[in-house]
Length: 327
Image (cartoon, rainbow, N blue to C red):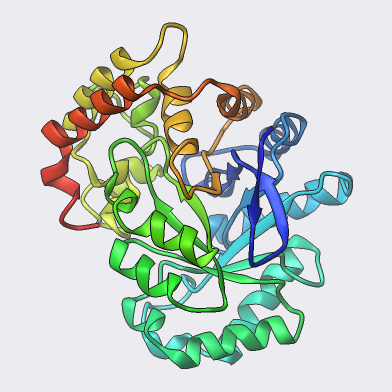
């Protein structure tokens, strides 16, 4: 699989990685055996980047990854975790003492002395504006608790503020054919600054897989049930902020634009991979088969210009008014 450079970490990772929110069982139950099968299928397919967080299953995702990688020390995986969502979202909680405690917990969960990458987990905008926060993050690097740090954000304005910080190694942001605004300013700014871009929610919470209809019902403990209107966290994290019924219709149109033989999920991942400035894309998977199919999308030919233009037209007609002004 193609690997792309992380300029500020001096590493390279696979262009398709693995998002592991679902391994925390926040999308419905996932057994330990199923989780290990997903991780193993990903590694066997050439994936060398896992993204997790301390709140995914209250640390379950981190612990599963740590256990798996102890069995596969040769896997060469860069593991990125996140911190900050275990407390009320107030800027005063983003302190060096808390950062030390949070990273200590993640290091224990993952079974490592030093984290490859820790990301602020969609913090309040005031946190990204705080010099003291980034001084504290620099201290974590100096103390060798972490090799580097990044910021996961909700909005393009937050992204641009994070990119401007000289110590930021990576930016994580939602980007997919239904969420295009980062293409305008964020990706060019990140490329110019040498900041790696991690693309999350590349399938719009599964909408772009083409498997759902307007009558699809998700499990009660699945965020696609309980967070459709932002009841639990930012609405943009669920279906990319798109109304579900509208998204289902747009996804059917998207699927019809792809080359013969290209499944919708693979087409959406291929779209994300070929956007200039993207370093890695992190689809989730709940089965080994899904993980292998996601990784295989990296090997598809790039979508041609007429297809890209048609995909952009779907967004402009159906979705731009819903999502472009907010995120």
